[in-house]
Image (cartoon, rainbow, N blue to C red; front, side, top):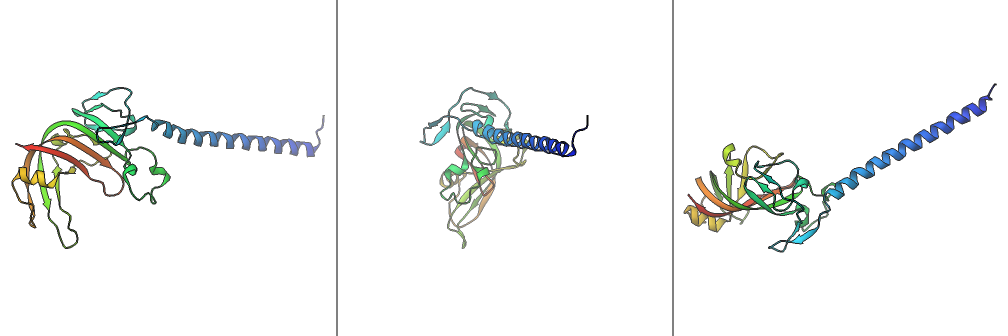
Length: 217
């Protein structure tokens, strides 16, 4: 039986339209699932911490002894990381006063948009540097650096972070313990300090980790 050429062309066109429609719908479903999955991973219940900040409610407790955090979206309150207890977790962008530069990719909790608050205790050895006020800035700071991998293992870190670790200390408290005045002179040296709180901060801009010093050895 001979089928008219016009009907053949019309049938082929119909098949192509149906095929393109199916492919388009599958692509839309895939994109929707991707973004929905990311949102679901971050939709934990917010509860107030002792400091009044919002943290994520824990649903289970992990007891990892490693100090390396692969993905912050897998963390839950009371998780153990390198003998530290996770007491707070939130997005760095939640602390920003100016949100005009935040892109839609920064809306979710991720390894590049997070503040993790840990309680515990560690004795660590490294180097410190006091930065006095200058002509450019009246601010002062005291930074502590860890370069020895065995010392870094005592502190929670993200898998994407470098092999060195820097965090800030309260200037007045640390200076008193380390034995120098917060004057206009540079002060630096090495020390073994004891800390009982560590705050890990990760964001593409300048973001500073910090720790609470309670003593020296």
